[in-house]
Amino acid sequence: MDPRQQKILKAIIEQFIQTALPVGSKLIYEEYDLNVSPATIRNEMAVLEREGFIKQPHTSAGRIPTSQAYRLFVDQLKYNLKLLDKAKEDIELIRHQYYLDRAKEKLYGMVSILATATRNVSFATLPDNKRLFYMGISHVLRQPEFQADPSKATQVVEVLENRFSDLLGSLDISEEPSFYIGEENLIPEIQSCSLLVQQYRYKGFKGAMGILGATRMNYAYNMAALKSAIDLLND
Image 1 (cartoon, rainbow, N blue to C red):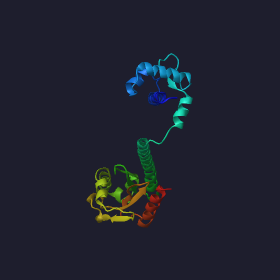
Image 2: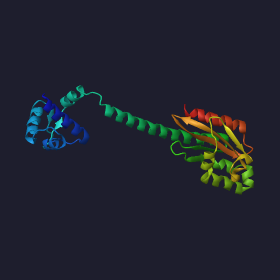
Image 3: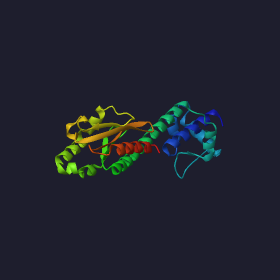
Image 4: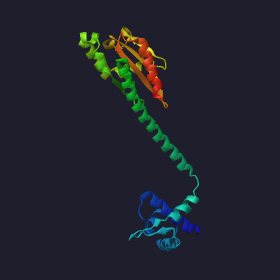
């Protein structure tokens, strides 16, 4: 096969890979700078067809590559540095999104488990946008101190829904647990509560996870439960 036929065959293969449509001589003439006439391209395509590199599907005027053509194309392949960079970029982007989705799934599950284990509100920030979600508000509502003063429970819910993310953003959250007890909380409406918060890490992502409950919460158990939940994220 001479160089011109190789270029024409390569053009047919590339076009068919992109479009899945039969490729005609007119398209090759218009899209590829081969410095030959459409008639010459048609003649060369006829040679390629006789040699088994392309074929005509049903009644289409165009041609498609055969397995023989793909074998020749693959045997001559070398790494294209631009394509290598693009492939790495694509894989990294997909990998990032995959682990981000996994992080969200694991966080939702772990926060639900943590709320059930501690019988308090459990919360976490999502790694992509720091948006907060929480579970277990019903546990707080059942506590005697909040049943005795429903307005306190209402204030806690309002803070969780509106200002809790800002509160977390103002705190120095590290991989060590931090307690904010009663009046130590910066928002007056949750000074009937204690807050336990700690940084989590998962596959390069990080955020905050914690527990919010009455000031008489079981501090020792909750600290152990939070650490266990964060550790289990990476199992």
